[in-house]
Image 1 (cartoon, one colour):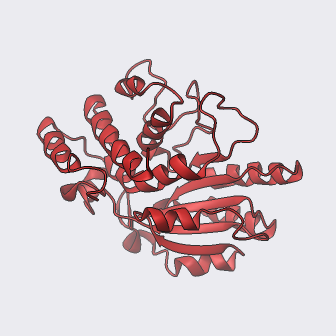
Image 2: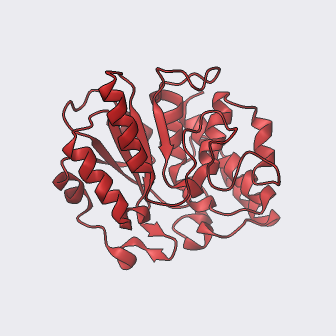
Image 3: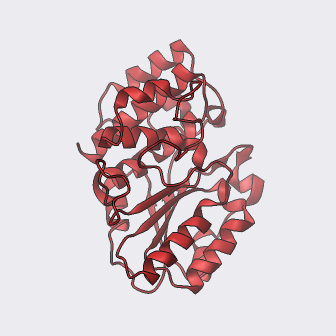
Length: 271
């Protein structure tokens, strides 16, 4: 399965999962679909038959409310049957609304309370380096999440300790729960902030798979953590959801799902 095919399937699953469960957060899940697809199809060292494989790379979704995209990717990679996605957010299901590691193979950390993922990633990266292990640690953050002071404390720590095995990827869709990032708490100059904390930074189109693939290549730095600012579109892939803050919370109706699927059925290369 190519990364483009995986991203397409992630979007279809995410739409069905939110509709069936009455859940929300379809917008942020769609904006990270391409990032997650490139990671899980080509970048992360994983073993679906042995989720705790000691040589695996670690992935933390710090913006845990977009967990449907990760659940879909894990199912597509064979960590658990795709049929389990049908029970997302249902009573008794292991697939919680915010991503959870409990009884879900492949999930390293339960998240949802924003601002914690990067700090945990720091600890993992430092421990791996102390043990002289080659594993890499990837943390996917939201841009609105970067309003949190704990993010910058973690960024300071990682830069100080030169955690070159740590990669932070920021889903920079320019929107957060209550409005545009620029009006809630302007992040710019965003790249300069990370550089000031001694991170190597790279800014890419978060929907261009070749650009993501290149930015995520190992060995590009030996003495600093890497921050990839991925410019994305909230709701990417479904025209009437794109850049529409309502789809951070709104649950799609049957008619909306039908309309959205008609767009997605154009295929994995239509985006």
